[in-house]
Image 1 (cartoon, rainbow, N blue to C red):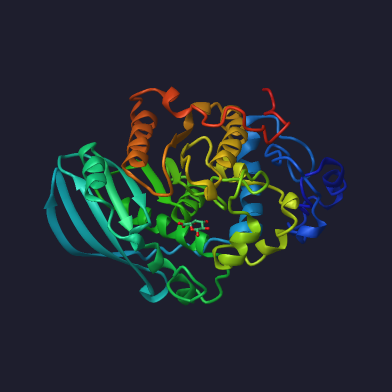
Image 2 (image 1 turned 90 degrees about the horizontal axis):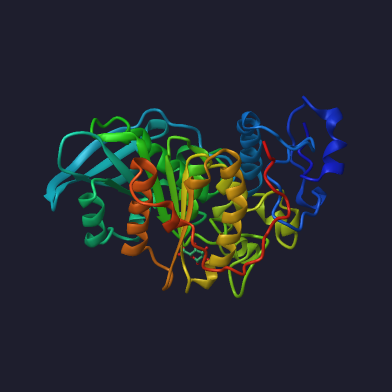
Length: 386
Ligand code: GTR
């Protein structure tokens, strides 16, 4: 089947090719879609009607997004090994530094800090890959551990450098062509492989978070691994929770991001520079891949480069899918004053949302307030009424 873009007339013309291999035409051959593309529209031009059809549609959308935007994920590595490098008490718990090795001949190794609450039983866990930016501030670690969560912090730049350099997974899998965001997302997945071997981790309640480029990676990690029960990108902007088509003010767009960071993306993504309205999806589609699992977007009102209003617009479009699946209360958004950082306020919002989603504590109204009540609606379509 040829995915020739989402446009009924064009897609209907493809019916004859059903059953053949999927091919992905160049951007210039895809139809122009000015609004945020309809995630319910199948490649053959029909709209899905029932919840039962979503899983198949989700797979088709995921392939499209990986093929055009992020590149494929690296192969799954099943030989993860852990070496505890150090262990010491912290306030309310214990902290261990662990070296994880994985991949062909154990060729990829990463450092992971695990801060675990004391006490028997299994604890929910929050993972971030942002160790390359330094240790998480003690006040944040205290808050996470104090509220009964394990904090797992790994260095995504050990998975793959933030450059063109062929390190980490690129060295271990020389034929791998995906972008850095996909490689980093794979790092979250490997950390989960390890966490699931631990007797004190609650494998049903694992959250992935990250800031900025780390937030883009966390979003993709959640979109590609259903073991992640809650995904929480922070200030992730373009290529993350933001929006490619609708840009408000001076914010990052596809031209800037593919010029400055081509190695974050699939080799083909630059085809869409100057043709963003031919993208057969937008970032609401990536968010929708997470449904019906939980998704929290945290945004800073002063972080104009990250297009917080665009994040609200893709949030509203993605919510159509969450609502369709009967999971409207699983998608949240939280705005705060201030600039580009992942601060205690953001982490506290994540913990509150996790308490709500995992344990039914608190109220969902705290995660549905919009900062931009007059924002445009990015889509005219609506979820199919069942
Ligand atoms: C910027 C980039 C953003 C964001 C940010 C960050 O330079 O334009 O997409 O990822 O870096 O990671 O802090």
